[in-house]
View 1: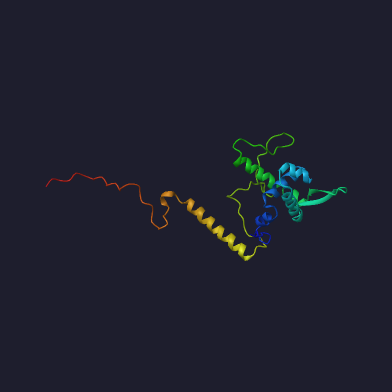
View 2: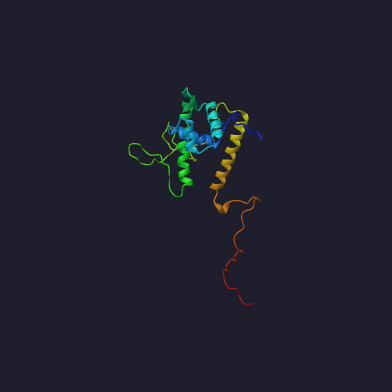
Length: 203
């Protein structure tokens, strides 16, 4: 079955996956950012089949993330050097490393990002360069850009409405929430009888 192409989608995440969505590609870029450039270096580091490595390297070259340079005439040999586009992927690798350490390393981190001058582990955060504020899910949102087509705008608007409805539902105190049928949730247990206000008179 032919794989669906994401290259013509307007979503920047989809377009990125079109170029680096295969896991070997991300690992090759990870190693390239650590200074590896040659075929045998990548193969030794990744323990990847030669034919697969060849395909992934060619894909990254075609995508503009690596540049193929000849470094030997006899025999002809080539190295694969990061382009500016490839070096820009460093931010993604660092974020993946931090996310993996946080969620999938219960034994503790095996690879860390540290400050070169102090050796202290970096506490990674996504920050708006203009304001210096940390980006979180409450104060920032995804909106349609100036080049978005009608389909993308409709999809983003629909998701915004769903998100607003969910936030509104969460803001309502639990006892006051309505069930899907529109009725208030039934109280737990039978209703208690009101206490008598006085003694009954004898006949």
